[in-house]
Image 1 (cartoon, rainbow, N blue to C red):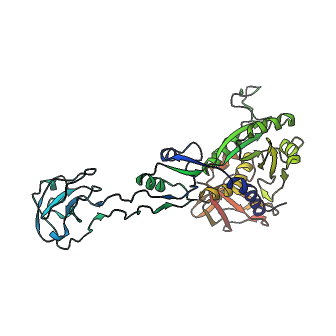
Image 2: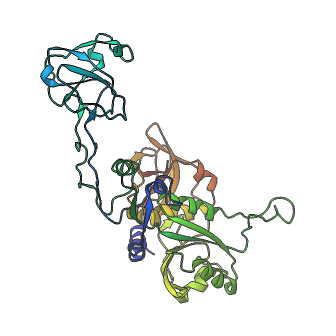
Length: 413
């Protein structure tokens, strides 16, 4: 039986080659800003991007005020026509000042701005009525002026290859007139929910009218979890019948999937279809000393005429989601620069028991600086996981937790 760390490393090693080999695609900035399909928020540049123009592209005013010549400091000057943002102003002659708005182009001849707050009216539009402005003594070249290229020089690197495409970077690219960039294609993950007991979306509520059917929680939850770390996921439900499982899986994999993620079918039951069908094709069942989520499997599997990385989780919903957080999310998050789950060590608010031979992952909430367990350790308590804000780790070798004992917690939200 593996430790959590051993299995996490194996998952990362399995995925690394195929993830590193993904192709690039060129997308316009608008598509990236709108999410570009799935994988929104976590796209990575494949090539460095340089600024085709300087930022700012021209000297402009940092304040609402008056464009002046610093050589007129201490003197009264005549006020001429105002300069709104977007206008191309006439040159400013000696002994004159022009009302100027924030971001407006500094006119030729001017080299400083007097803030409107330094005038008797103190604000626009009242200050537009001034005929004469006293330029404060001490006004020097560059006062309240944003110089051309002071943010980014022309030709300077805006971002190196491998940079995540953040909102700030998109803004900088747009300001510099960059219209499109090359990014890594998001990882494509096929999420396979197994079990003949799973009802389809259009299934009736139940043969007996009680609503007693099992819906596919894993497919929905894991596709959402994958989207949070920049992956594009598709879901498919397959039955436990081996003769139907393999053709359905290969059809869904096709040439689209980079990774296959299955849930269910790898434990010790009589109808473990994932284990039965995929073990001969390269899947290795590797139990992990963890609760929930002990049954695990992974491997390069022969599917649709190629070798495809397969990561297999247990079928119970909490087991599947905990397995994702512990094993798969770290590898995908590191790939796209997504943040790790915030981690802290906090005292337990109450007592609990744990199997000494397993690393237990409980659900919890943090209040008053202490960890409160939410529900029990069972792997079917999905409602309790939905109500929790943290995953709580009880380490291997611990059989009981007492109030005040330190526990590592991961913040989920």
